[in-house]
Image (cartoon, rainbow, N blue to C red; front, side):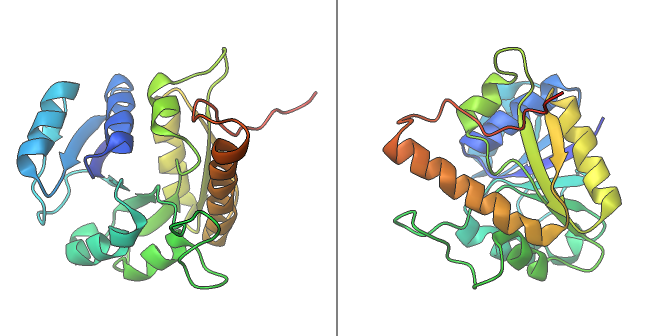
Length: 210
């Protein structure tokens, strides 16, 4: 099992922490509001509350913060993230959900990787799952697919093992530039919510035909 630090106190942080605990992982919750971090950790049962600015206890650090602050958070931790696997779950979409705030040809994950110290490895994952779907887990007898992208094979293997501990299915899409495609998939989901599905109780997955 893995040792996980989750930076953030929102719905995705809670959903990931809850599933991680059920999967037998050690979970640390970190938030700027330490009282809320302690409340969330206590509500989940079994999690601990970390301190902002201190080195995260987990070998895997999940950025469950808005994209706009993700690179800054990574920069603040600096060398404390050396040797860590950093999971980027963000979606750098613009305010009207028509495109991205990242530079042309780049992705949120690639921009976050620029802020990470040498020896840290950024892996894109979980950005195509809504928190309510993630919290519910397997749907209609099949595991949820978690698409991942990253440049370091060992880091992706560690993230894949963590994903499997949640009862989910990791789907490797390639190197970190593929994060752009995964962020476009999230933009597609936002379009579906706005124009056809009208709710977030769905997920994108792969059906492998015989």
